[in-house]
Image (cartoon, rainbow, N blue to C red; front, top):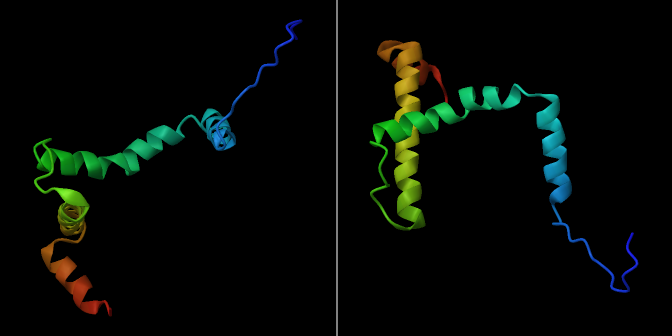
Length: 98
């Protein structure tokens, strides 16, 4: 396009095509982010609220991973109790074979 003797190089990230594909997908389905917020981000917001919106109490990957696993386990148990009730949850757990 230019008369300059120097050549120009356009650099593109190797995974830019994936970002372009996701942008097109989000443009074609504008409600998808709303659905994501309702289903995925609610547990994290709840856990953060329980923690008092503070930092994790442990350090290191293993400690933080264990702490987050305990938070997620507590969230899931509380959710199952709200769905089945205490006696219903116990009954469901007794009928499951592991």
